[in-house]
Length: 109
Image (cartoon, rainbow, N blue to C red; front, side):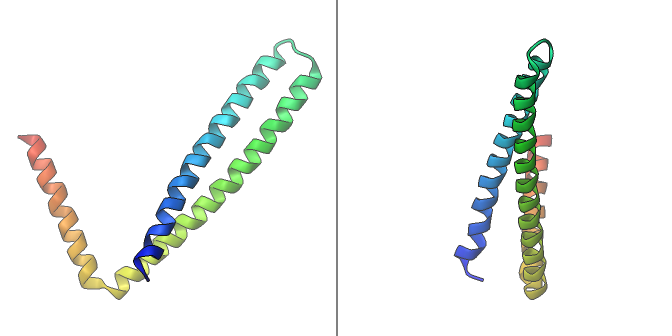
């Protein structure tokens, strides 16, 4: 796999994660508006907000499913890479462990 292929999904995942967070904020805002409209507003306004909320929730679910699928693919590629390059994976794990150990020891004192 080329380096460009390895890096492309990560940026896409960050973008999708940000979009998903924005969608959930939109759902929360619509839910708050729905609650406000239910406390005395006409039925029509509540129905419109409910439809928007349902639409936003459906879109958020679809995006979450797509994100889960991409994460599963990334995990599968990482597993393949580990099987194809066991020594590099071992070295990477060792280096990460040493880095975390040094950071932990520095914090302790």
